[in-house]
Length: 416
Image (cartoon, rainbow, N blue to C red; front, side):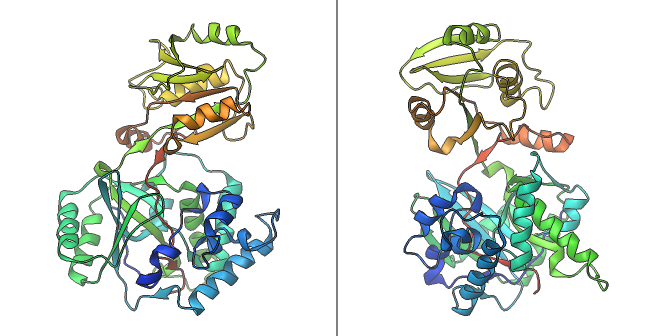
């Protein structure tokens, strides 16, 4: 039974929404954030990437950075760039990309659901990244950015949302610089709010699609506040955190690819020879080759693209983890051949979201920064849910959801 809770959102005035809205903190490095926020005092990046307002080179995990986040957050509120709603609402956040629109319900998820395994995850988190976001939540006493959840689609919820958006004008409606449409409605009708919340109680599990570290941080801070409050009763706002819930049948996962700095001491021929023991390998020449099915990979090496098709015995279609292409690549190539044992910490490997295109893989190899690149066929939503349901964990950097949620359209305060 999934918790969904209405809350008093902290939002920008309509005329500032596009300027305040920013990409999530973890898809930009500090340099990119500085550039993106240049000339825009309203950008939420001043709060979620506050180092952009401090000298370059500052330790982004140092106390002055978190203090700057709070200073900027207070400034946004004082200047009226973020204003709190007068009552508790649910919200609808829709995104349009390449002609397709997905509709998410914005509300609070429950810390209890995370602790009790109602909110399921498919990736491991890193303690250092958790602690970074925990500090950010603690200092601001707010969830500045929503997490991206999915749930098994419910026809009655879809019908309620469809009817509401067809009968009401959005509060915000703009196209961001990356050509993504963002549409945001406020549900003020108590009957509709209560009905959606009631329908959520019939959903057995929700799933973290994107934002594992933010989810963990929000839940851990909420749990901390419980322990530190001798009068805790379970209704406090810190028992809940900001999430956007999308039905699973509206989402698309795109590829998440790998680039590696060297061949682990092997020359070209030795490396290809080893690969041919695992894959049917075909030279595709200089034209970019994209994997076209499960268990088919693309490789870029020494100016050429290759098709690699995994041979039977390298995968197990009856096993939720063994069927994954990332498992095949990680075990037989990255580990066995290239000696990369820890995907989360090894500095010889990097990960490239499919939104950047396969040309980005070619660019990074041709530049000499990397030696070889691998492109994978995207994981399906069914695979993600099957893995989460089974209690298993995907290898790191397996799923890439696009479009990314914009941060700043609504903020959740922990002391409402």
